[in-house]
Length: 256
Image (cartoon, rainbow, N blue to C red; front, side):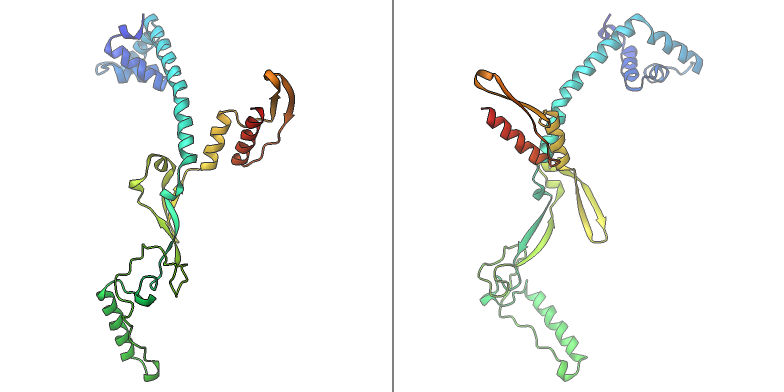
């Protein structure tokens, strides 16, 4: 008798029994036990668990689960491959941004807008009002104009930064990540130095993938004409999985 011929409660019993391996608990979850004592629940669970039809149903369900688990190996390999091939620049990147002089008129200091310039002038006036005559600061100039955009790349002909701009670390919006980058992303952490992007270990994912495919091996048999073996050699594997993968590729090319 197969699981398909069980009644609804018995089918639920099979599912819960596989999950917990506890017949009493599975019976309690799958049947109405409102008027039963704990002893009665245990007895009924025991009889059902050891009945012929439940044994056959459990065997069939476990075989199916085992088959599904084998199929899941492909999913695991795909997960590892996606992690070690994901572009970390989707999560965070080091960028060179323009300086205040890059796009100013004549490469003079450029303001974001008139309000920023007015605030800077007011600040100098306020500081000068409390300073001695010899410590007076000149008012900011407007020669570079307005329109500063900090997201632009450095201007190669900037006379101030010489096209170098300034470097900055940019953390990107993680809600917009692609599929691979989303798998690489492992959350954020607030530190005393700011936000830290956490990632899954790409080197470990590559190593696991390589091991699963049998790339990491210490003995390789090389073949000659018509596939006849001509030599067996021991190859010391480096700790770096990328280097190990290169060695494997070199071996494969040598056999062709």
